[in-house]
Length: 166
Image 1 (tube, helix red, strand yellow):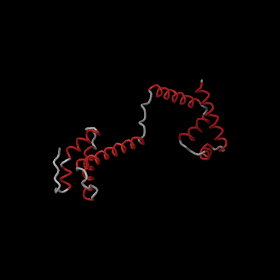
Image 2: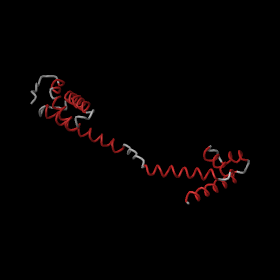
Image 3: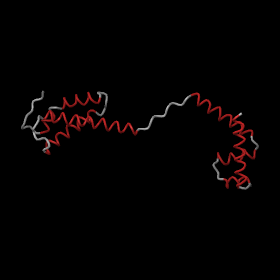
Image 4: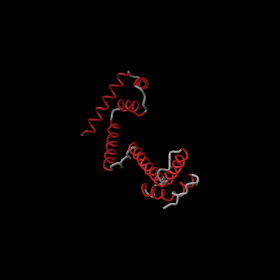
């Protein structure tokens, strides 16, 4: 039990309870939590401010007053942390090696199909998708109409889909 001095300044009265408050906060938050010291300092600062402002009337002991402040601050801290965790994004799961292998095989298959297309379809796909040119820019580069560009792109995509499904 800490001995209270009625005439001591509030800082000294509160600091006598630092070890008790520290123990309680560490026990509630976990000793490995790096924030426990900050929470203890906030409790002590808040207690001194409340004593100076007159919120502590002396109806109970300073220990009881500090116990209530400590309990409420611990609850506030836990609520704040759980609120932050609710909004934290879920970590991305590790990619499945089987899915990655299928993706690589599919990409290789599409690459082979595209390489086997006639040059007029392959060139349109290259300019439109890889160089990211607009229909009009592809049409100018190949000296064809924009409508013909759309037709060739759609036909080439159908050929690729048909070959990949086999």
